[in-house]
Length: 445
Image (tube, rainbow, N blue to C red):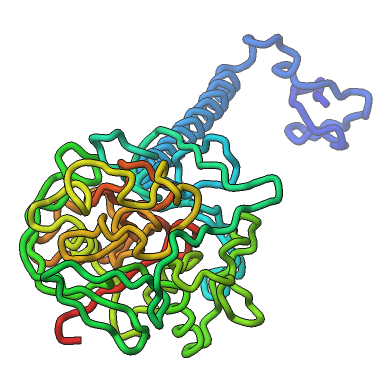
């Protein structure tokens, strides 16, 4: 209230003026004059404060917008640069045979197949049936390059989509075919005499036949391929041994019986024809000579250690498939669907085939099924730009990574992904009905 004696403004509860001491009555109060003035006529200090607050709010809004823009840019860059699946692309994914069981098109991006894995990280990892690692690949986890370009499997960069061949009939999933009748050895694989000049030996522990790969040099990669297959670079490879065929169900059973490791199993409908009996710990009837599938990279590495071997490096695998002449396919430079089990091959165009079913498609060193049938895990971590920094002698791949490399294509791959220099990739825990492995060993082991 205002004191009429000195015009001093006092609070409503004041009994006397704080300036002159005059007694005040409650009815004398009225707001100060400056509160009654219209907007714009108040003291300058209040207008300044109002403008300052307005500037502060605008500043906060602009700062928030800048932060959101930076966060979105970082997220978009990761999406673009990541082989989500598909490395094939530098981290984007490859179009390949690892795809869901439906017959429709799927993006080439990598989606790790997750399956019921007892030994993989996590209790369950749903898996897509054919996610094939690859540069452009299928996944489950995970695109297909043109004929002149090599594709990566669950790991190859590409923006195309692929369609997976229908694998069901009116009665449900189609069981794997057994292929032409052939005599079988004690370990299961068909007995096919090696070519003249091929040096072989049999490992007693797993019964696998291995072929000797004489050391030499290789122009690794391809100038006409995908970005991950460039640049072409010379590497020298020392002598080593490699399994003549992919590891079979019968050989893998020796391993799980000796170690107690969980059997290959994925709790998905597409995996039913390939799932092992977890109670009896046995593979499906009549599939002893089929390549073992539904195995993760860790499973493959554990098997190799148990057998006194190891997984081949990418360089070793490519050298065993191409040789010093750098052939486009294991048998030569021209595509021939009759020499491997791949998309469009007959009669194995919808399922894996017994190992060694295509002896005429063997590579220069006598290794079979290095094109098609099933993708093969190799030892290396996958990096789309590794070739630009690869050492020239016996390269072993990056020290770390998110994906493991896979090679060779599968029964669901087109010719581009079956090229000997096509690179694929998949998460180490991925399991697929289109991925298996073979082992390698040093001369002294």
